[in-house]
Image 1: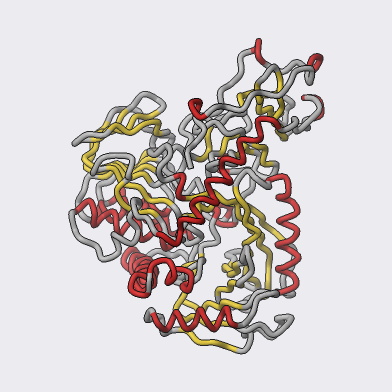
Image 2: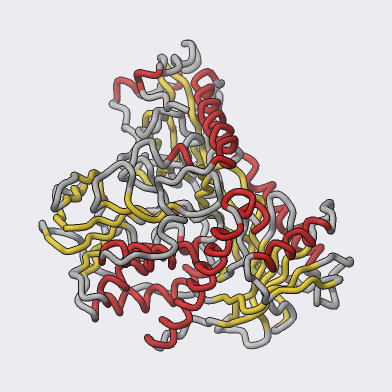
Length: 538
């Protein structure tokens, strides 16, 4: 898997290899160029190749090397933001379409698995939404009422969870016909099917720029270009858009732990109503027929804004998991991922509002990455083929909803607040205080500097200014990255870009501007940038 996505290793990455593909070393042309080989990009390329389009799929790392393998891979039509919230936002009729579309996405995955004969541990099972510790039962009763109203009839209210060891009585809604799978096993099979169908896949292709036109052009960091009648940007967060989409969604870190439980002891998918909520499932283990792996996620927070508490979040997640699932043994895996939360809870899938008619985006997974990513394949294939889709308006990236206006303002005020980092004190008193494998943001001669000391003791020094919209990055000690608290861009310790919306890395400092420990700390902190220098509008 892609080591640059983070230092931690997910169970999916550890338990399944992915095929290698060649590097992009020549200019090329295609009907469609898909940028990003996660679930949205691979599914889109798969359906387009089935429709006889000449497709080129590119990624700057290996397939499944980004955020897709950092999921917990729930396949659910039980929306994270709850149907009662969506009904207030979109109305009953459109909320019915949300239910239908996510149900269709699960059915689509199941149909592909059957057609391609993919061994990826797919299983249909029930899901259980149970009451949080401090929540009232009316929360579930209202949700069930809305579910019935929108046509989601495969659900019912239970007195408590169907687990003999569960510590207390928690009112629960049971949702039938949910599912789970091994996402990397599934997507590597789709990648092979794309190539069998005539598509091409290239790794190590870092896209820098998209030029509009009847035939659009993608420019890559190595100087190569791909010209295509249509471009699909499926990079978790768009690299093709500087401001428009990024003001309507926010990046959140989410944490996952996994440990053994007795085989069959925790059947189903599980979610609670706490804020942030927890989500639980199991996966079979090939090397252990007597146990399943219990996978528990939660403790979300905005990217770059609480990374110093990551170890605390992992511990809190484990305490919660052991209290609710006392059969859990030692923790074997832990990892974190990045979730893009939109202001109204639904993904943005369709034409990129920052480009022409033939550039498309898929972003804003909102905690439903597996079904939203699959919907991207269905919606974008129809859009490129010129076929009307009943869900297209629902996921249109240009949509505006009145109820989401306050969330929009709140998120963007939060972004502006992050620019106060320009007057924060340094993370460390000196470079000597930075341990091997760690980083810090320090101030020197009016500059904010991202300093990283690798495991061999070599020190990298880069500008701490995110090249996207000039916020200062912060050190993520769990994933060993510098993360931007404004729009979620992430960078390796040496400054290389890991996640957009930034498309270039942190600027390496020349020798004459590097921090010298002997005179560190004798100058004031840097000056906050003006609006003309890139401070984003609300």
